[in-house]
Length: 515
Image 1 (cartoon, rainbow, N blue to C red):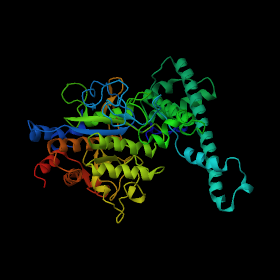
Image 2: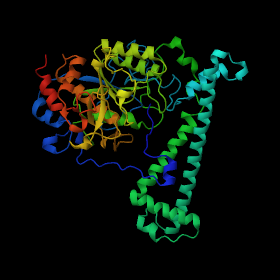
Image 3: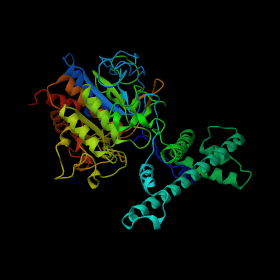
Image 4: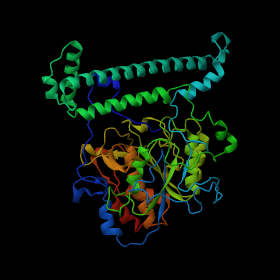
């Protein structure tokens, strides 16, 4: 699932809870720099290019990005997007006979041949729908005794949904009123970019204005950037509106209009060639830039990898993802030459586990290495069952070709562990830079974002480079190399299997002699 995750709810804006502040990276492309030479806890990628890889022959590698849409025309990405050599653009034919028409740059599983969609339902909407098909017109006296527990769960889920929607609507209405009152006050102040001092000088005309003034003084003492503070509040309100309109709306079903296009008879051959999507594709565009932004064009940023091609596979909506889409994207990647798959999302295996597990095994048999974000809940994944199951005694061998990545910060101290990052001494393999990573976003722009979604592509890029220069290494060997060459950090000792941050320089030195 990809959603705009913001720090505070709209109700927090009204109650005075402070927004967190985005840390500022000390140097451009800090994730590529060296701890000793540059003073930031990057992965020593630039050092590796300068000292180990300069002039060295290599083979191009395909890295699949299963995510939302990608802005494939961004000036820092347009030259690194994969092109299907067997497909003739826009002729409405499946030239290479792989089952996908006009898949010139990848495929979109979030749509039918007629249209694409961006938003999907979150839980509990699919579960409620399933129960509703059974119990929607029944009361408790009409339900079989053995089905009563499930029926009561259905009623409880419906009640919880109504409560949550009530809260969201109240937050939306409250934030709108707050912003309206704030706008009125700003007009009276004659200042649309006020500081805390400006509010201290403001003389309220009534009790509501006094309350607003006092609130803003308190808020700006903790969050001095007025514009950023208000912008985050507006963005969170918009996020709540998306929840009401799409994610938690029982009447919204994005596949209903063209349901026949998703029927079992279609197998995995549904969707369309639109790898960008219907709205500006922020998340995957940012992820893609981290992996492979053009290193030779002297604009913007530099990606980790110097000669990979990104295969866009649009399978993760804004909202709850579907295992079948993820499974089919994995199969497409494996069948069309990807050696690395970046997944900056979690594999829940909640609604079609069999299909997803089969797809993963299919890709592993073709030599694919999976790179997966650990998630941003600040949770210990050792205490939860996730996929692949990494608990001692539960391993199946899949984990040998899966690298789960936590997010690290700039310095080799307590900040090496980003507090939002999930972790796990058995469940997370490595950490990689994931704080204030500047990368590509739509409309030819760049922006800093934080998250394990940013850390995973750092590792995907590194894996791609290792495979470029040492193509005979297997996926399992590449994982072993990355795991064995981390830079240890005290803050990560019990947070991941390796206890450290990935290091390109050390990894590529080991790859040169690895047997």
